[in-house]
Structure formats: structure tokens, C-alpha cells
Amino acid sequence: MLPAESSSRTLLLTRGECRNEGKQQMISDDLARALHDKATRGISLSAAAQAELERWYALRDEGERQQLVSGSDPETAVLRTQVNAALAELTSLSRGLQASTAENERLRAEIAGLQERLARLPVPQPA
Image (cartoon, rainbow, N blue to C red; front, side, top):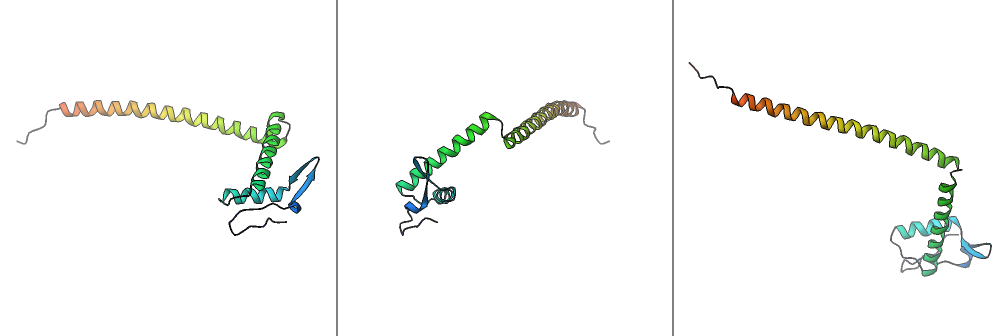
């Protein structure tokens, strides 16, 4: 069930939009996503809807934290591998950039020296 929106653009929760999980009432994932969508688009939520959304955020954050800490999730392992590969590539690119920067500085100094030598050469006079 989608939440009703009043003319003041405030999102309201009704009992039918909640499901019972244990001793706490928890909003469905679909409703939480709808609330998140509304909140991120600047639509004000009722106090109850905002509280439910905050609780949903906290539960998702905790679940993600546990996944990352345990490291047993295959998707997490793949992501870690991808991050490590990206870091290795960044390190390599950074070293290459540092080498190019050093070479550029050396060439600039050489060019400046050549320009000074050129400026000191006598200018040929027309005969």
C-alpha cells in the first residue's frame, strides 16, 4: 500500500502500512523506500513517518556494518577485491604521475638553460 499524501505535502503513516516484527512494528521495505524517496526530494514527512524512516536507516546501517565486519558475505569479498585492485591501480598511476612531473621539471630546467645560452649568443649583424 502506498502512503497517502496530504495537500501540505506531508506523508502520513497508517496502521495498514506497518507489519509486525517481533515486539516492534516495522514498516515494510517498500514503504521505507517510498519514504526515503519523498524525504530526498524535499517532501516533508509526518513525525511518525520520519521516526520510522530513521529506524529503517539504523537497521540497514547495522546490517551493513555486520556484513562488513564478518567479511563472510561473498559480495563483500568481491567488493574488497575490487577496491584493492583500484587502490593498486591508483598507486601505480600516482607513481607514474610523480615520475612524469619530475621529468617535466628536469626538462623545464634544461629548456631554461638553453634559452639563457641562446640569449648570450652574439646576434649576427647584417653586412
